[in-house]
Image 1: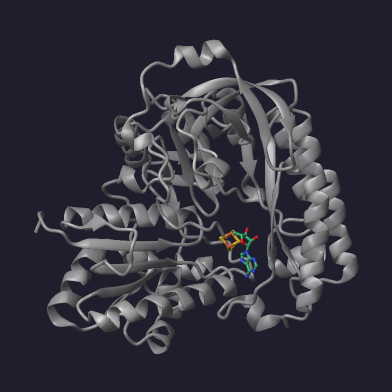
Image 2 (image 1 turned 180 degrees about the vertical axis):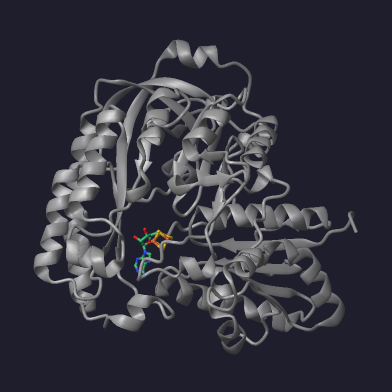
Length: 492
Ligand code: 5AD
Ligand code: SF4
């Protein structure tokens, strides 16, 4: 079954893990003769790769599935699948709300999708593939039911052809009380470093210049070789640093308590490693952190932050916050405001607490902060963060930065561009700052030095040195031309 016109549509929401999972699922289906389509109406297989972190993400998926059910009614031969976190967490609910769904496949079972699609087509019976719950069996059995799934890669599905995610770890063992991830993605398991290095080499052969290592708590990565040797994240990035052709290495997301000095020193000393750390603190109040079971105090987080800035001069740090967590008083929230004022994060992702069934917080604490209060706190925190982001960005004016050019800026993707005009492009610095600038498409995928001339709270505005553009010869290969849409991604 390798030559046919079978098509697959995939809608992806959620975090980088989901983006990568979608890439791998599509790569596997392509081997089965499928090609990717942008239109669910035309697709033979329609997949929703889903997120359960907040209720809103789940509700949006239920609505999105509802919108495509009409296609399935019209053509019962279509295969309709819900995969990923919601499949694992919601299982029966998905089929209950949308009985025409044929496939429900959890995060640890994605490798089975091609086979399950064939089974649905042959039997017209719904297929479920789910991993064990955290309490359903012993740790070893539960671990085995979450398969690490990282086979063939598919450049067409990546955010850009020269950037790729590489999974170094699956699952999470932290059990923060608000979070569904330890259930939806299973026990924490680190991949063998040889596999990761091999994958990076394959990616570089495909034209990739930047890899982002992903794990829920990536800095707790440790591979035990079973003979007394252990590979930590610092060892892994040192090995990856030696891969010829690889230009940049990033890693997300970090857990504050696991930020060890060996890792910070590796970030400082290895020139290919991006000087940027995403280390979510979640709250600036010790009592709230305790109820969240984050395992550190505000003072311990601040010590980590000072240490990171001392050991990696110039490092940019970003954070996540949850506002309106159970029992968060106005006083608790003001402590978070003070932390954001003082910590000078490059940027912060701020979320209103969303109660998730099956979590400890849902069991133990009432969701007692009213929605309007959550909204107001979200806005207040964002205002403080935005002022800090603007100040941080303005400090770059007059400096030169090295930027990996990612593609056309959003503005340029939206407008109908005059063919003769120089397009506006976007890229990122070694501290993960976004820069927009005017330059021809042929520099997409290259690293350029830019002079920063202006800044907003979200973006730096740069000018390319003329000699840099002249130095980049040839035209961008067709795969590097801006595409209207690679995959539907809305970041968690
Ligand atoms: N409600 C709101 N935000 C949440 N996050 C995780 N679980 C929840 C929840 N139940 C946020 C955390 C995490 C980010 C990925 O999502 O801030 O760091
Ligand atoms: Fe969720 Fe906490 Fe694990 Fe992050 S560390 S995935 S917030 S349980």
